[in-house]
Amino acid sequence: MIRRLRSPLATLPALALAACAVGPNYKPPVIQPDAKQPFVEGQASTMLSGQPLPDKWWEMFQDPALDRLIQDAFAYNTDIRVADANLRQARGVLLAQRAGLFPDDHRLGPVFA
Image 1 (cartoon, rainbow, N blue to C red):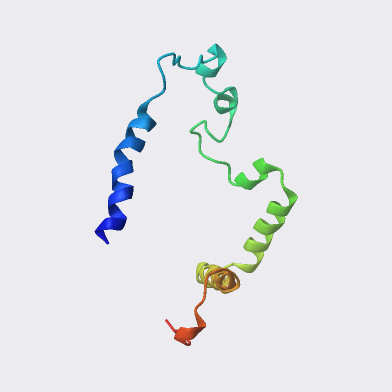
Image 2 (cartoon, helix red, strand yellow):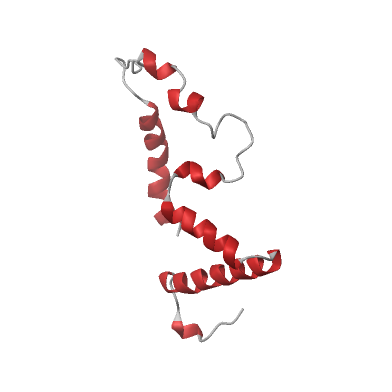
């Protein structure tokens, strides 16, 4: 066991020293002047202005699919407890669908949590 560890441990200091060397002619990259200025989009964005969001904030995205999802959510979730139950059920279905993506060891037999 010690014999197997000796050769990787012997090369570790050499690798560490080699990683630090960049050469005698190293020059840091030149940063263009326009790259130092703040983003123009960030200053003009209504989402980053610090102002409170409008009541129908999702309309800022101008996405018909998102609009339909929000309309369905308001139509089918009139009670906060019903909305919570629907959300838990949707998450459970999603978790069950993704379960096949994880490794499974059938030799252990069924495992119930």
